[in-house]
Image 1 (cartoon, rainbow, N blue to C red):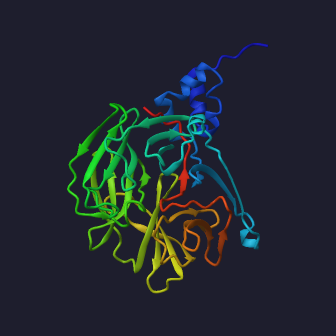
Image 2 (image 1 turned 90 degrees about the vertical axis):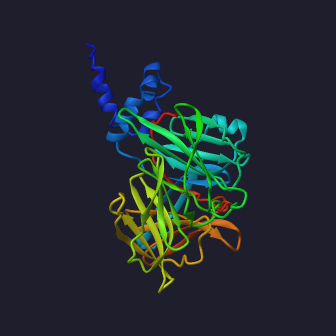
Image 3 (image 1 turned 60 degrees about the vertical axis):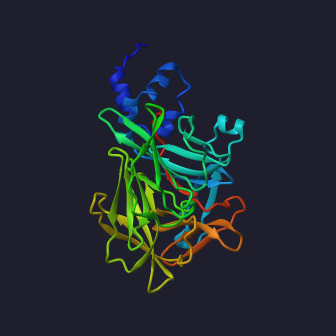
Amino acid sequence: MERINIPAELVEEILSRVSAKSLARFRSTCKGWRALLKSGSFAERQSSKAPKESLIIMLMDFRVYLVRINLDGIHNNLAPTFKYQLYFEDPLFDSLQVDIRRVFHCDGLLLCTTRDNRLVVWNPCLGETKWIKPTNSYDYSDNYALGYENQSSCKKHKILMMYPGCHYYHSGIYDVFELYDFASDSWKELDVPTKWRLRYSSYDQDGMSLKGNTYWLANDYTNDFLLRFDFSLEIFSSIALPHCFPFMVKEISVVREDQLFLLTTDSVNPADSHVWVATSTGSDMSWSKFQTLKANLEGYNSGLSFLPEEQYKFLLVCYNDYSSDNKILHIVGENEHIRLRHPNISCKSSCKVLLNYVPSLAQIQ
């Protein structure tokens, strides 16, 4: 049988349209595959052309789990099924018995802080890790964010570290800002005049990454707004929330790294919660209503995290159960409210534990 030689350019073009999760399975096949998957230019091409997988991950018992929730029969009064697995199993994490206390997602990379006060960047899809030493002694009040600067040929990843002075611990106020550059493996201090604070204490408030930048809910002691850090310009900016909201802003969430959602409660009818989606993400952000839910979230602020389920118009919500001091996963719809009580889905933590994850071939420089 005659052997057909397919041009390497055509092979790469075909592979660039395959999902990152599927490609990663072949990274140990041969040197050629490893070289291709480690190519920054191929990773950029694959990121722009391949379909993005939207996975749900949860931080449970200080491990990162892949979560699958089947809602196929929920409109026919069939209970949803819930499965989870330690999908992101990594020999380095297992051998060192690393306990993850907080996790931040950007571009397929997870920025993790550990219970023993260390900092690590992790690509679960490729099984790569990089340990980073902060310049100060890490404290629970410190806040980290991972983002990137878009360059002509690749993304330049950076880490923002914010920590409070001795008078501001657990207040959401920061006065020291440092930026880590992966390329130079070094930190530098930023001069940031702050006239804001995060909506809740730093122990509760994690940022969300959207297209390489990070967003938080913040206020200037008068008004609530979105605070954005631009990793390309290395500056903060504030984005006003629409003044027409007769609602109390609760939390933000990001899906597929390209959609920003806002969760609010109704100030007139606390039994109603509303989800909004940003229709633009520039300086003048505009919003449209995504759905209204029968869920009273008025008293829940600490560690609340949520994800919209777009196919069935449900909301996955995770927040502290004050009766047990654990987190309980809720599935909320227009007329349904289902609590998934399973002994292993709880996590005694006030940080966000429910995140959307998009596998990628992004390299840790």
